[in-house]
Length: 273
View 1: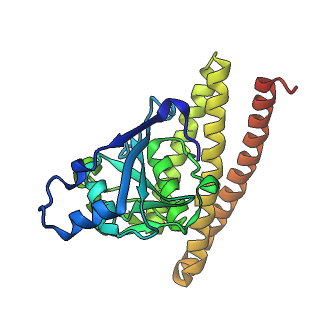
View 2 (view 1 turned 30 degrees about the vertical axis):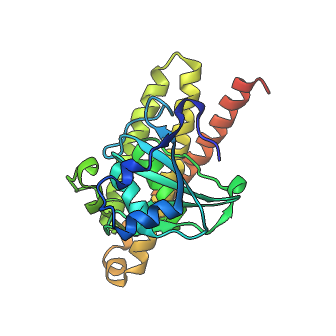
């Protein structure tokens, strides 16, 4: 599993940081010491280290590797570590040559999701998205398998102060809000591309627009599916469904066109033309 070179830290965090406030006789303290060999801050993802926009909620993402002595781990240990990290955290749990990815369920305090065990060398985490909010959300979706999850847009909770109480929701109304937000970001970035005189910057922006347009096409498809599934809305909103269908087709065509443009940028940039 590789991360951008500039984001790499690889610093071991002393165990005492996580168990200092536990009673000496605490069973959890004993379990932590018996189970955890090392806790390492592998990487810190932020706008300076991976060159993406800061999110509305996610300012940085820490990648923490926990090396354990046996292939079993209680979520309470992850919770102990999670509480000490000042933000959003993705965990790599490693036992010998095997590993898992873990993350917290932000709508339910103390609940965590994890992938199945797999060879450490085969472990993958795709850092895709136009900003840190979307990158973290895509990691969450990768771990949980729930592609419909997204941030609750009306929440005013500060994730650095109350991360456990922030929730994910999947309503059609919020999906529509997400599509509007994506469309606005695409429009802004396309304007920046048109005005840019820096070829490298143009290529980078074009790649981000390509990802956003693909994502927007998926959101529009989900909106159309929701309209069709609800019989009452379908009867009263045939016209809306037609409009959505046209939008899906338009966005999908735009995504294909943008992909072709990006491939051309990439070939020019790497000299394959």
